[in-house]
Image (tube, rainbow over all chains, first blue to last red; front, side, top):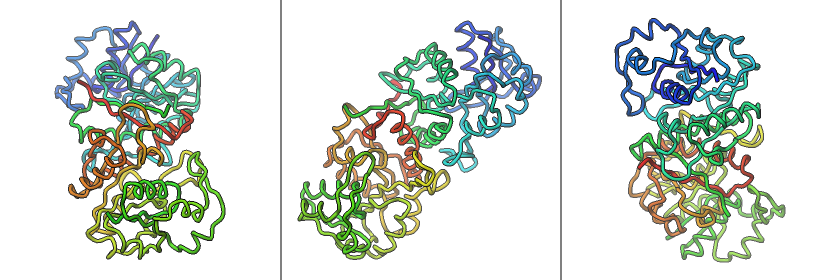
Length: 232
Length: 232
């Protein structure tokens, strides 16, 4: 499948590398490829050091770096791995015509770190980033998923031992099936993926992030997840 | 221990009955005891039918129904099981002097059902009900807990099989220890109770409710809980 990952941070790179390994035709989308390649600083995502993009690109020669519109045109399926606070701007640059009719797997969290850690959300409770994106691009098939785990766990769920769950939410059942198949190819057992319902359930996924980051603080690790247990 | 449960709904009653069974000296606080006893309608909490209070009281003769100020004066420890949207008004009637120096176990969720199910919150993201209560009553020792499970599970955790977690949050370590001991007497294993930190972590507990109620919809049961799993 031709897949575009929007975002050049650790999250986008881990997903792009995994999809490349799985044999997909992968592009990474950014605002200005030359500027992305000119960066030399190391950054930190969670507790993982992240190399300059140019260095990472040398290790992944099959993954093309494209400007947002070209990256969108490349895709049959788009992953939004941009920072949630700037996702709407990034998607505007991709362009509605490059999103129409496509599955848009949105894994961004609208985090605001201006008051420290754990972050607050730029939208919550009565709305969500997932809903905002679906409203802005009604012809895209937005599926919210992967927001509940650290990026290393997204693409290697066995890093967390035993049974644990992942969520999908979206209005289009076929799009959720496509995402589910992708997640299963990452190693998520089919029965571990819970369908939360339509895109308004993105509120649950995004608001859960406060519990997640609070647990990160309390337990001292980003690599945690939850297993949902029901009464017999 | 002399314990007062604020609130006459199913949640308050299940907690009062459990505490009575455990040998505590229990009072239930309400705005107007005569009005509470005059009610004849059955109500529904989650998927459980709830009898008129007078009928329940006959089955629990050891539990006194008191007006909020007297109920507060009775207590060494206060449980807030009022509806979260009206908790601050209820606590104002209890009175600051009746809360000063006491552990105030706050299990209320500030739910707003005006737009249907799952409910939104009346406060979220940059503040929480737990913090509002702590600010309003700085001499009380507010501990947020029990918000993450259905009331039947609060007092009988074994209804959910296997390992699953509960959270506490609050500024006073001794108060959290008192609550932890109470939870253990309910049947929660000590190692299942996770300390989320100070009272700002009430945001995590309260915002998690959106995920909880979305899972209730998706899975068709209120009796569910989460088990936190970390990477090895």
